[in-house]
Length: 300
Image (cartoon, rainbow, N blue to C red):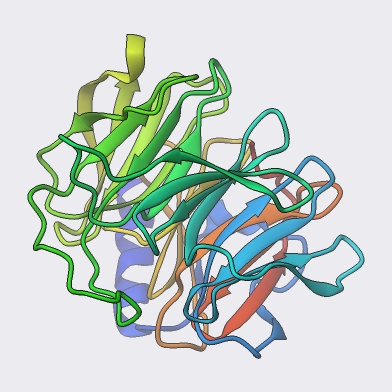
């Protein structure tokens, strides 16, 4: 194992920016691992989330829109304006949970496009701008990250961050609890389908950690997963983790690097699995969206 890991790492170093697949990663792909450009008509894409039908919803944050990519491959605008939505995730009821950082809020958007504010600025709570979100399948509790990224659409400058934390919002509550306060800049977040573990990327620390989820959203037993940060991320049915930033990098549950996919843009923002069978890797990357056909399914 050590030899194969070293060989793959050396190959990646020699071909920086290239798509490189380790032997253990080849079985993940149904065809070419080269991302296919679907459309390039946006300003900056983010926040892909898939509903039960396999439709993918994603944001074009600078243009304040949420788009839908149907299972028929057609694009349509779902919501505009959209609260400058960023990261998103569907809950068990079919509501789209969105980090609406125009006013530092967390929204629940129903299938008709009507939104309810779940979290907003309030006395004793300082939010920088909710960024990415995951909903626990066990109890519907919501975890979200709150890093500080200055936005040119803010009407007045926001105060510099008091803290950049990971928060947990219990079902029925409007008061989130900071459950991780030690990261430099938490960003990407995703949990396991059994609701037992949470992965959080510290994008400034260039690390991704795994936590055990306890009662009331408590995060314990922090373990370093890989020495790489991430913007958004997702997971497949085998527990492989997909990180973004400079392309897409895929790791096994043990932290073995299985593949690196080059995406021909400056920045790859986020990722999810879509399609009727959940075997289409959907990538939001700067002005464009890309897809890769997979043999493995994504998890919800």
